[in-house]
Amino acid sequence: MQNLTVRLEMVLGQVRNAANGTVRVIDVGSDHGYLAVRCLEEGIAKSAVCTEIHEGPARKSAVALKEAGFGDCSEVRVTDGLNGVPLSDNDIVVIAGMGGLNIIDIIGRALKDNGTAVMEKVVFVLQPQKSNEIVRKYLCDNGFVFIDESVCYDRDIFYNCMRVVYKGINRELSDLEACYGPLLIEKNNAGDKDVALYFDHLDEIFEIRKRSNPVVRSALEERKNNERK
Image (cartoon, rainbow, N blue to C red; front, side, top):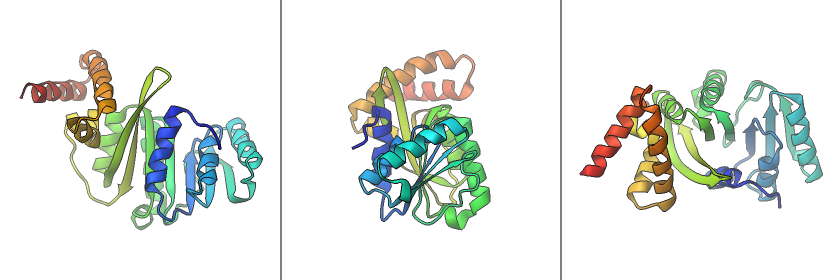
């Protein structure tokens, strides 16, 4: 069985929970292809597509899939995001380890290229490296709904992961929800210890960022006010 980092195990968990007769997992920016290999090993998907913008990482993914015995049910493409990869019913698209603005760009182009009817039947698993609040606001402003959020601590860094689907329903997020995550807030209120540690970490970061970011400042103030109640 392909070993994964704690971060990728978290991402895999969201993929596993989303799989419901999934035909295909598409790993955007697959790097080494390990996540796709693991999905095929577990039977989460019947096939996998890995995309990479650079030839080197694409070759690594192709080698990993072939050596694991999945060369016939996988495909590796050198492309930007999902360009040239039409989406289909029950696809799970993973975009992990990228900046939030890159993720927004990829999703925006996918929505334009595939149309809403197709997008409604696709699950997106997203793990931004930064700009989480911008990603969340974009998703809710453009018809996506949060299904789940999770966190992990891997090699001295906190990460979070979002699972979303397109419903064509816009929702306005508060600054608190955008910065901390609407479903993570619910988990924190329910006593989730891992989320509590993540929020403590965010509090420290936001204390610095609030000086130049009004959204972060508003979120931190609302969180402090809620704790006083």
